[in-house]
Length: 383
Ligand SMILES: *Cc1c(COP(=O)(O)O)cnc(C)c1O
Image (cartoon, rainbow, N blue to C red):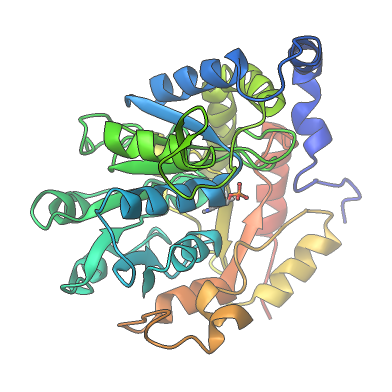
């Protein structure tokens, strides 16, 4: 048995190569005498809009707030109103669903597509009612969720498509989105980003952003995040304070320049796992090329306890994304039909949750490590 340890993720290791540049960036803010807004935040916003190919990016406090601000922005501009239904994948991190609840809209949970773990868009179309106003595809694990069904929902049925892009910054779709761009963040009408430290591009604290090419929505989101103020001491909305911290913006300006390298590194590891893991007990994720940035590399196995015990015994770090889906969390377990709708079986979501195991795919894992991990996994035998 090998004694080498394969770490799942260590943020110190991830950020080590950036330290001198991060120190300089933070020091710049420290000595600037300006600690809210300022050039770091606007530079960040320009960089992110350019990456996505959209007109507006607004730096905000975190990914959940980014989603909340988009939904609230649509309410304030008269596009959504209380009680409207928003379709969201049942197989997601709970933040996607919480944002909809928080805006007093009704989350409609739709099952996953087994082949991608993402929203089954055919089932999503079938779940549309006269109260449905939007769909929130989540690009889970870094894999784009975008196809002709979502395009149809937007162009023929007039629904708003809100990307939860917390996990897929820089992924490129073979389909053009609604704005003609192929990059996540500009496929739908609006998108939420998270720069939580473990994301592909992580801040050193909480940070997030909203992107859109809808100028009305962008103005509403910017005002809402700043006390509802459109100009100084003039409040058009009962807003909140969800601004992006300029220290985090300065950090992100350093790291965003390495987005392509960071995503390419993950693709190399996924490619190694995909070609070298060959074990009938372990189902591998599909390789979608440029359309996946591998925020997580998630395999599925019916023998999960045995498999994770085996990984532990071999020093291979792992995690689960996510073992309990939102509808099975205590906060939603007694929700009624005004709070949450589940129009179809969530059988695929529940099976994925019972079988998922995430393998190491961060900067802590070298290509050699990935080869070794694949070899070890090939010797796993479920009894
Ligand atoms: C991380 C994440 C969020 C929330 O982002 P925070 O910055 O942690 O608030 C939302 N949705 C998904 C899919 C996420 O992975």
